[in-house]
Image (tube, rainbow, N blue to C red):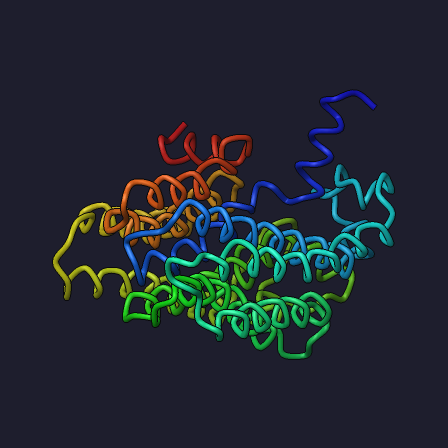
Amino acid sequence: MNITTLLWDLYHFSRFSALGATAALPLLGAGSVSAQLTPRRATGLLAVASAFHLFAYLHNDICDLDLDRTQPRRRHYPLVRGAVQPELALGLALICVPLAFALHTRLVAGDARRPARGDARTSLVAAFGALAIYNRWGKACPFPPLTDLVQALGWAALLRYGALATGGAPTTLTRLLMAYEVLLILMVNGVHGALRDLENDAARGARTTALFLGARMEEGRLRLSPALLVHIVTLQTALLALPLWYVATRSGKGAGGVVALAAGAALSLARLARGGQASDGAGMAHLVLLLSVPVALVAPRLAPLPRLALLAAHLVPLLPNGATYAALRWLLGK
């Protein structure tokens, strides 16, 4: 195996392309409480988030392995190809759980300047538990919107963990960011992911929100049901309203960026719907814009070091992702 193949296997195996969405969450939570963050605590939050990310995605890939083996999009994944054995992947996923708590104890709670609140651990337990439940039953539940919600609450718990890790109490911004994260995951998992894999999921008997709400493939074309359209519009309206409400009721830096990103996300979805067909670039553009809104809400209020950590966590994993450049081409109309 050459070095290029090894690096791409590590990229797919670790789901590095999605790491930014995970790594930013505890930093967003911390930034919603305090503008200051010591280098030690910032490093600790990123380390805990990385361990959580590996658990969440490795465990999900193991639980969905039989389904993924029939999904052409995942034919290059090491688990699907058999380059990595499921037992090894499961062992690594499980090791990440105590590792996350050890990193919290050593780097986050151990920061003597401002000790983390005790219930930070509780939020981290809730985050791990919710993702484990979703991974195990997410595509088997008779009512998939419920397991989508469980997963969404798990990611929101990781954001709350970051807020509590500062030693302070969650703020209005913390709660708004948690609500936004719940809506975002419902959109990402129940709409984007479910529509992307719709044909294979339907053929294999998987249960997803898109299928539950009536989406179908007919003669090679995607057909969205009225119920799913209402679901999408409701989520997007709330995802637009939350940040706009916050910047409208509070003066501060970055309001223009928040408004532009939130409106851009809504407009990209409308443009996608008008086009009548999905594309990787279109979907990725919508996702990146949605993911950037919380960063735009929090980054301007931070001191230079935590702002740099947040921006790096958000942006660096996007750089090697080909879908990022497909999104840019789509946004530019090319």
